[in-house]
Length: 145
Image (cartoon, rainbow, N blue to C red):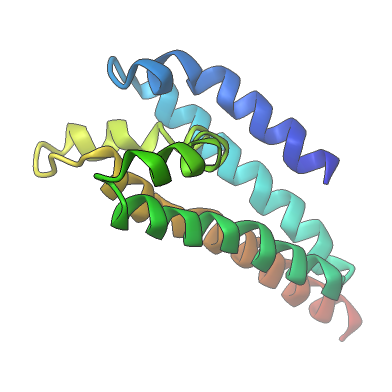
């Protein structure tokens, strides 16, 4: 759990000014978000090598909260009362991934509002973590053979 606090805080630190203001994204923000997910994948790879089943439950719970609150943010985008309740989750889960908005905006195809952006990026965390975990399990099984 300490890992999640530290890595999220560091990613928030590097994305905070752009995330808080909601503009002036740069490639550095995208880089910080990619590093954030890469560190999660590497951490998950380790737990996959030792095949810790409790870690899978942690991933499902942690990133599941992200996905559920992202759906809530998207559904209740116009309800200020519910948005104020979900705002801390938006900061915690959306802030570290905010750099991906630079990538989507630079494609000039998408004009994405914040609730849609949060919904689109919410599965990235669980996806990266489980890829890392499954690769770790695969490497572990190769070593046993």
